[in-house]
Image (cartoon, rainbow, N blue to C red; front, side, top):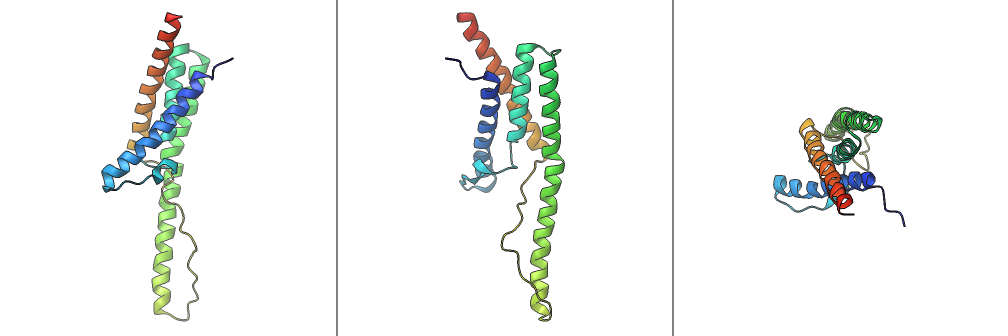
Length: 160
């Protein structure tokens, strides 16, 4: 029976651990336990960054820093992390502005009965991307996990 690809396991573990840590960082920031961050985007640490950096570190530790596999993992990871803290974060900021605008129009429409206004059923999701520190935190977590996973694998192979 074949075992699962350790690179995939490492990356998925990085994502899972980062998502779990979001519950703890939420508790630390708010003082309240909330399990919703397990299934949400955004927050500290970035699970996107943890996943791609753990994979890149794992591949680099196994194939060497000059391999094509490492190059692919690093470039893929850089694009994902740039997107997480760039485009996705800005989209979340725009969503916040739209939600605030909706609140303001609702208040104004109450003062002017001639204005016909229907409030949105659901606000836009605001927490979509990451602040640079959240991306860096996920990248550090992932790199540590990726190198640790490679070392554990090396020890198992040395014993065999």
